[in-house]
Amino acid sequence: MSAAAPIQAASAAGRATSSLRRWLLAALGVVCVAVGAIGAVVPGLPTTIFLLAACWCFARSCPKLEEWLRESRYLGGYLKMTREGMPRRAKVLTIAVIWGATLLSVAGPLSDSPAVGRAALIGLAAVGTWAVARLVPGSGGTAA
Image (cartoon, rainbow, N blue to C red; front, side, top):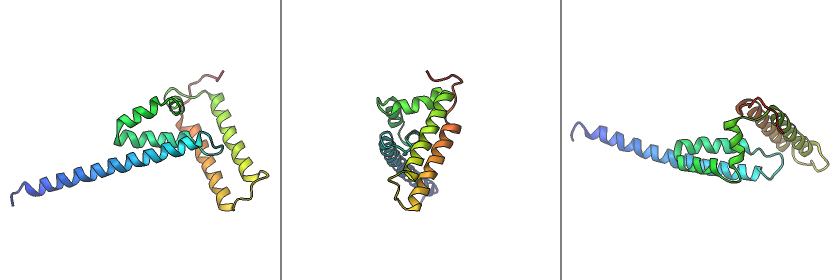
């Protein structure tokens, strides 16, 4: 066996791991897009945070998928605000809607779900609030 054989074997193993990692990240990105798309129509389920996670996964696995998502007719608008900034008024309104829908779901007339489910929903609302308040840049203007 030559001295270069272990180096070549390690390099091949690294490429295989890298390829597997890229496939796993792409698959996770697709799942995040699916959950984000559901969240676009289901009140209380965050959308933007899942689309941001999908962009992160796609940027590390398949940049063409990231570009597709950013240019998407239906979901691209959610990500546009993350690049250009979100007006303060829009941030306040978004957070108010998140908590309004969450409180209605947790304490409303049809809220016979288990305490664990209600706690999870409140946790998701907290994550959504944090994402809107801290991760989405402000544009300094007000929404029309």
